[in-house]
Image 1 (cartoon, rainbow, N blue to C red):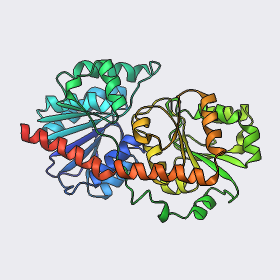
Image 2: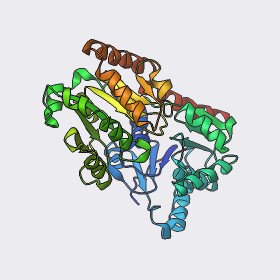
Image 3: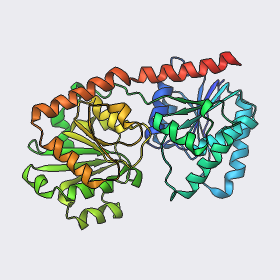
Length: 383
């Protein structure tokens, strides 16, 4: 267990600290805090890149081994002992496993305030372990958390239907760091050279780990119906994210099946997301389900014309500043791609500018930090 001892009043507990939407939002929230000395972060499954970055910034990071089933009980006892020793005023958990294990340990350790964090809208029934853990959390929501923060209004509504305590729920959407996602700070030419993209190619980008929820298979199916257009307009796709690479047998099988390998650049997991976005001419989010779509918001901030499915809080994020289609519908996604591809360049730029204006006006990181801090302060003052 890695740790750095100091007095801590706020502890974040998360399932893991590899790169992902929840993990990145946690990192930004912690690093944006005016006072960082009293904040601790606990990962149930290891350090990860995000944990290393937090440690380098002077944040106390504690890690456990909850990914080993035979050690669950012993690790839970260690977590309980740590929380009992540290006694933070507020424990904020992120994702279902952390809500359950972290929330329960915090309650048993006598921590004053427990806040759960729900980061997605739907849990597919075929993900049985997570689904039943979520249903268990719904029952426990009556007495473990004082507040339940949902990343999206769609997530709040769905989890109320699952049985979560509605009167405890609040919605705090993600915020974006516009100093990082600033198109004037990244050279498009350099970005395209990174991926060996020529200046006359039109690049449709998609960022996200390879997963059924993220819908890369739907995007491939949509692309297959557009092959004549792809060839005529010199169009390629840039996929960025964990397992979006040539080692992914399922993805390669799909591309080979549709004879699309020449049309897809598989960049894998990368941490220079602004550079990836700068290499793109438009952005496509084909997700089946989302909470609050980080990648889409970042693409909007970079001024890209965007196509997205109506998953999670996509409608609330984009309003009329993007082309929206139903999720899990390759034909609808293909039509949406055609709509943007057939726009005049000026219209594409106008759509991207509208998206940037909206996200910058309504979804800043500062706004999100203020909402979390206000929530914590209200809990402290009420006790």
